[in-house]
Structure formats: C-alpha cells, structure tokens
Image (cartoon, rainbow, N blue to C red; front, top):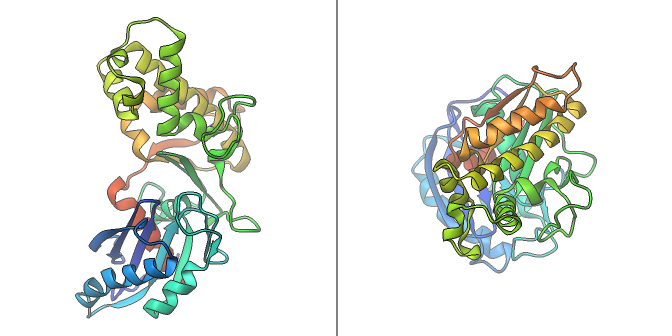
Length: 322
C-alpha cells in the first residue's frame, strides 16, 4: 500500500446505468464533499465528462489548500489495464469508451478505472472489513452479483482486465436462464436481488401454501417484499432465503478451494437480510469444503456503508497510483 499524504485528496466516481455518484475523499476515508448526476442524461461520453467536470470543479475549489492526487472510477465493464469501458450493457455509450484518458485530459490529473466490484474490493481493503488482509474475495449482492478477488495483496485482473466475474459462473447446469446474458444456471440468476424475487415467485407457483406474499400481485413482489414477509415469519419467504443461501454457500465453497482466501466479504442490498441469508450460506459453504479448508475462512458482512462504499472504493484506486 502506498504511503498516504494527508495534504492530498482523491476523487471517487461510481458510474451506474442511471446515476453516477462522485465525491472527494481524504486519506482517512472521509468523504468531504459528494454529489450525483444522471448518467443516462448524456448520450455521449464526452457530454458526461463535461457534466462531471462541471459538477466537481466547484467542490474541488473549496478544497484549494489540498492537492487532488487523481480520479478513481468504478464502472460496469471497466478495464483496469486500458482505462476503457467496454460494451457495457447498461450504459448508453456503445463500444469501447476510453473514459480514463478523457477524464485525465479534462481534469489534468491521473485517472484510474476498473469495474465496480473491483473498486468495492479495493475500498474494503483500505477502509473496511479487509483491512490488513492480503487474500480475500468480495462478493457484491445487489441487482446483480459482482466480485473482486484479492490474492497476495493484489487484485486479480487476468490477462485482459476482466478476471473475477464469479457472478456469471455456472452453478446450476441446465438451471434458470439469465434475463440478459442468456447464460443458464449462473450464480447471478439465483443470488442477486432479482434472483431472490424469481425464487419467491417460483415457490408461490409450485405450492398452495399460505403466504403473506400472496397478498401481492406477481409484479409487485420485490426483494424488499420477500424480506418483510420473512421477518414476519412467512415460511415461503424464509425458504426463499434458505434456498438462496444454499446456492451461495455452495458457490463460495468452490471459490474458496480455488484461491484459499482469509475471508469472504459480502456486500450489497441483499445482505440487509442479515442472518436470513448468512446462516444458510455459512452452513452450505462449510458443508461443501474439503476438511483442510473447513472452519478457517471468515464469512463476514462488509463494514462500509452502502451509500458511501462506491465512492470510497473508487477513490481508493487513486492511492495506489505512484
């Protein structure tokens, strides 16, 4: 880890399909200023960079006694090696976008870019539950399932910058089709918030059991509805989480036997379910490990506030710059 200068600040930018969050962060991981803008308002990346610059300049000027070390960006399909966003399905900008180069030229500071899950892993290593760890896996459980793999203190990027797509590994061959990738039986199809809703609907269709979820039309069932019903003791909603945890735990066992991490850190909206998701995940993870791995790997929730994590993760990339 690079030596941090208290007189330097980092800009963290998290690009989502709808909104982009940005903030200015100091060496202690404190967000001094932050804001957001609509990503999908900008048809071209040039227009987006112009809007981002316009939003950030006033708050950068408020920190005039500090030096801006650089800009870190977490983005879908972000490639760390090339600084490009490549064929992101949820962005209006098509093809390969050299965003890091564009931002660096506009802001006159270095810019580093990676995918959003890798950025979250770097943030966790610097500011969260993975402080001091050299080997861990970060799993983000939100609308989709992302991951960042750290081994020997370094993120694994692979030969082309796209390593670590554990959410798209096939864990139920011949299973549930994914709604956008066309893969069949992937982890994301089951363990994302979207997957949880699909499981709940399948259970409702397959049984005639009473359930609080039957009070809702199918299109009204969200992951929050499933959670609220589970908390009230609804058996089908609780079974939804048990089944989800089983699949997640089995998958984590595979990942552990691949890289033998010190810990697996779970992050994202799905972990608000707490023990409903943690207990079955832990049980099935341990059950599917070789004895040499059992009861050695910590399974923990992220320590970063979800609202801040994206900005912190992106800004943490900057401190790695020489």
